[in-house]
Length: 286
Image 1 (cartoon, one colour):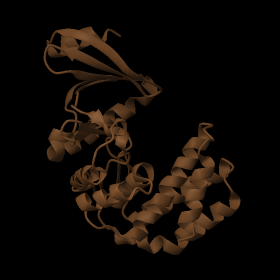
Image 2 (cartoon, one colour):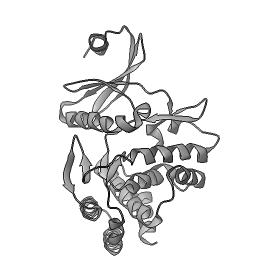
Image 3 (tube, one colour):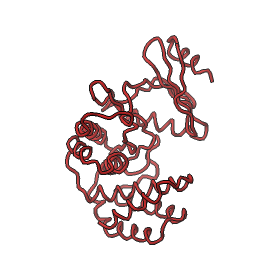
Image 4 (tube, helix red, strand yellow):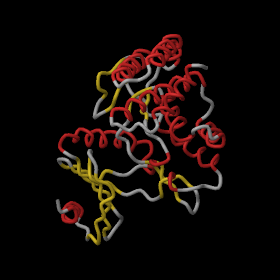
């Protein structure tokens, strides 16, 4: 595909350079330098074009609330999406002087995302797939599915039983959430863009994992994947978002660890399986 010519035809702009940023199973991503602002072109593999529809739908939901913090969709065609390029550097590549202040911005941004209400619980594409009316039903389904995968992939039987019992003993906590929200579901440092001169968060990207769920499941994933016990980051997240109930957060951290174990195991990545299993053991022992 001639990405430069595509951008010229769609925008009428002159193109100075095209640089491939990533190329993988889902899509190839190009950064295009134009006579105006730079653009991002995503070319989706045929089997993954439903992800394109999802991305466009979720950015549309976000645009009404966080227009300045997300890419703008410029053009959508069969298998091709053109987006504006957000300014900033991924937070994962930086070392801010004040992690608490940085995470306070992340917490405030997540809180704004979570004001976008959803009608039911479930996985998002351009709609909610297999929607469920309550958080309890949704999380029971998710844990059942992920535990079945854990068992099929050779996970420790004793740990599987302990997780199932722990969820059964604490499932009443899921009912504390009665209103599903849009959840980014991958709000980690690699997807957060920052201006390293001012240490201001400029926005976020990668909405391909978005779900309609309890907002705390989003916070829990950030805590489990990015904060990893760093007290300054955790205090900052709470500063920006507000207080949250630990019991529900811990149940969702358990879910995210189970989901991650299943994913790594399914692709043959065994390096972190033991440490993730220990995380799960620690969480069910609380």
